[in-house]
Length: 173
Image (tube, rainbow, N blue to C red; front, side, top):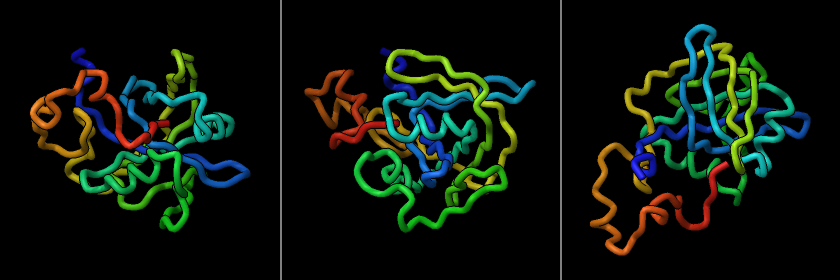
């Protein structure tokens, strides 16, 4: 399964509705088109966060820097408070902008395609904000970082399927 070991950036998708701010750690995010400017991300349509963001039609993809594993864990866990005690701001687009991230992609939902238990969201980009990070947070073979050892050495009994788990019962989306 070559896709199972592909490195990927670890963004957090945020939005806000009448109940307040909401967000989730997203495992799939990519550029789709330059003209018009479109991106895509995948979201679990059974989760609590994505349906609220979808309803408003606006989002912010906060691409994390390499040292922001704590921020990723905060939004990747269904346990605990995501915005409680976090110094975030409401962007001019009306979405939560997380502090100190590498890049913010502000956008609006263009189309949504159901794919199994996830939605593939195509978003029209309204604005990009770059905060100066040089290296993004990367999730690869079950770990965060930029330098990875072969997981077979760390876990000789692991199967390819087990390497896809985040661990400790934490689910994305």
